Image (cartoon, rainbow, N blue to C red; front, side, top):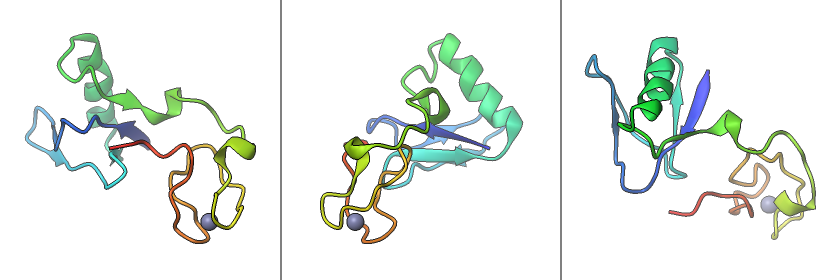
Length: 96
Ligand SMILES: [Zn+2]
């Protein structure tokens, strides 16, 4: 239900109930549990997980030339980090 971008220094995100989320290679975690998503959002305010940014708060669905695959010229969505056609890194890919 929500995706969060985790800084490279966080190798996992641990919830109060012990659930752990391991970031993907692109540094994001996908949280289906609403309580966990809320916990991350609320924790941000308390600076416990303040480096974690929710993906939906980043730039929206504007597709444009700035997220076009440099390899095959596929016009990817703004939220995509890897080219769905050839797998090449897209310009907006989160580094680290
Ligand atoms: Zn491509």
